[in-house]
Length: 191
Image 1 (tube, rainbow, N blue to C red):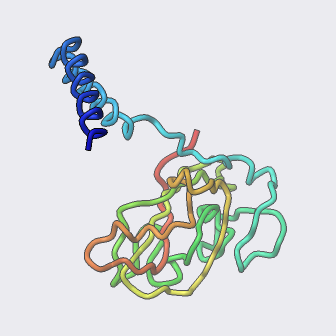
Image 2 (cartoon, rainbow, N blue to C red):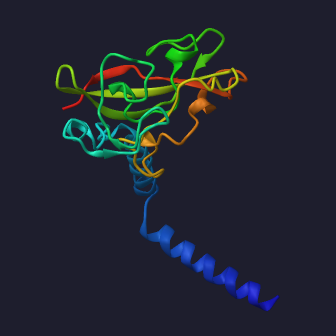
């Protein structure tokens, strides 16, 4: 019991000393600066171009999807249902084009997740790299059609915006938490 009084006295003296040497305005100002600093963090730029760009065109080694033979990643621009279609350089899932959707729209009966992961994919036809935002379509059972596991530009989970191992359906509306397939729309050119 006596120990509690000593601790209380020590805390009281420390509090009075701090209160005597600082003003309320300075404390409020420091708290405001900290809150504003934390609020700015999401606005800071993030390099979302990936680490691939031209490496695909130069024949970098790649872990191909089930439809590809083991070897070099050779992107093509004619069969959108193939794992080596250039937009699928970092897809991990089923291609929606095989399930009644397209490269940019979800199949009927599914909903688009609000979150996505991104990668920079090289288009062999025009020689440009594009930023692709992979978005999951959710709400129906897994389609199982055109499964691909491509890892170009994938980074560890501590960079989730590049992580294709995450099921992104957690942001979908209602009870649409079940993964179905993935679309791959172009966001813009990667520089």
